[in-house]
Image 1 (tube, rainbow, N blue to C red):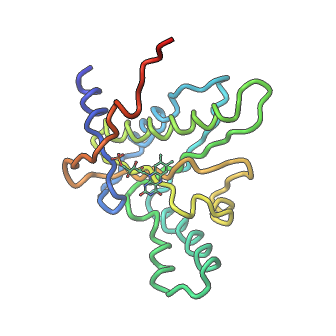
Image 2: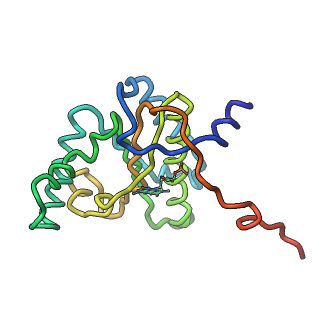
Length: 189
Ligand SMILES: Cc1cc2nc3c(=O)[nH]c(=O)nc-3n(C[C@H](O)[C@H](O)[C@H](O)COP(=O)(O)O)c2cc1C
């Protein structure tokens, strides 16, 4: 499958602000989430879930981010609080990949967390395969309890990433990658 290999060897992240509308259609969002959920998952626990932010809901969700920011930085300038409100409006579609990893009699929690990472990466790749660009980011609000509460995350749930999706401005420039000699070795006895 040369197309798949080309995608894998040329894919780059875009900045959320570079990702323009129109947003993926409802059918495309279903396709994206279907691919995202089709990942290795030891014990078939589905230790992840997705929250879709699109349209006006992105700004409503931004209210929680702005509120948390203002509480954290009471001296913050109004324009900075306003910028926080727009965090999720930079790209036309944002999908929060939520890790639901929890202690289990057989399956290590670490493996459940890794599966959430795989789901996020599959989502990024599916977006590219559909002709969109993507950005997998967390930023500060992924770690703010007030924001997580307002997004409905349970205490054991964590944000693996906010995957921003939209139309890319053009072909991306690559960035340096670690040489294989530094990251790979052959085991020899
Ligand atoms: C879990 C996770 C969280 C990330 N969070 C951020 C972030 O908050 N801000 C950011 O600029 N990049 C973040 N990144 C890095 C970008 O996703 C991306 O890897 C980086 O911009 C390099 O782009 P590339 O995919 O083109 O190599 C994160 C990556 C991962 C795996």
